[in-house]
Length: 202
Image (tube, rainbow, N blue to C red; front, side, top):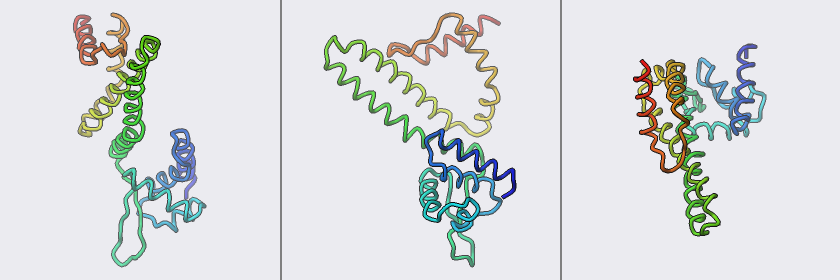
């Protein structure tokens, strides 16, 4: 690997650990992302200086995530692997998988905890209220995930590039008071209120 490629692969492995992903798995993904051609497991093992078994485990997991796929070349019996090359496609897949693995189970857990708190009587009122706020927030974030991943790529790029404008819009709306995350709050009404405040300020 070139020095630049090696730096990227090593850094991606460290980032993977920060996200709760196995270091080798993240490094395999990084290597395949920057590799101009599909690589076989032996090549990956040699380039990363890790065991074949570790590479195989990482490849299986990456295929499950959907960011790596197995490819075949005519005349070559070996399985080769390549990563999604489009950054936005990779972003969508990772978002969807993290939602499935992290957000959805959290919502289910919060719902169960709230049901249990309700059966605990008035002594559990404060706990229930806090859990309901967290559930409302988690559902809102999950809904946002779903809407973002369904956007066509040009629209998603415009959304990201317009981040400063969006932040400005909502910082102006916040002058009317903070938006809460209680179960009685409507996300749609909050957004409409922000938009009305922006229009009135023009």
